[in-house]
Length: 291
Image (cartoon, rainbow, N blue to C red; front, top):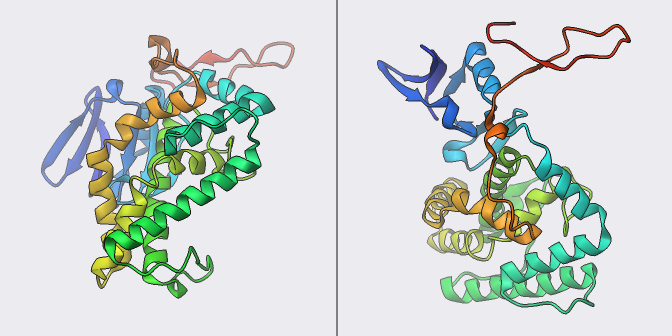
């Protein structure tokens, strides 16, 4: 949602754009993405929370994720399963194997270590860069960038950074809305976005690398903006958001994850307002109309 105001409308929500009000079926949504020019009222936030809907503040067409609420699912089952997989060295390595197979359609022998997988990935990605360089006629000198000054990079490196940032935003929103942790990665570790990087890597050779080289070849005046536009089109045609959760389930090896059960969509707010005699809390759902 962009360029408008999200507010309570009757028993649901409405997105106000001038004299037009677009109904928002809050009970059917898992995530609401608020883009540039959008505002949201306190009442709307409360209603979204009560209906177990994650709110994400994003860039235009959702290609950047700036902040997100806690929500999207009240079940912790995916997070618990993810934590178990990442905490078991053998299972974590199995996930890394599946991620490599997903990306490059190549089966890895079970004796290959995580460090070796990272090295094999690096070789494959460098080949993808070289192939795109030849296909689009863009000179490639390697992946180089200065995080303190992005403008120092050459056009293709700037385009790659912009495209990857768009991909990270979409993946981050999908991961959070499904109830996974963005921090518990399998190939990447130690960062709050480690799992975002893992998931985004599944798509770079198909999406962001071709987009970046295509835009760099055209040499537009506003390179980063054009990259964002091309990414929006590529993500839409690829049906990225539709595929994301299914692909995550595949690489995690959780074929029994068929989606949310009815109780996971059941909206409720937990309140700490009522303490028990022993000083603990009763964790009762907040009744409609409170607060």
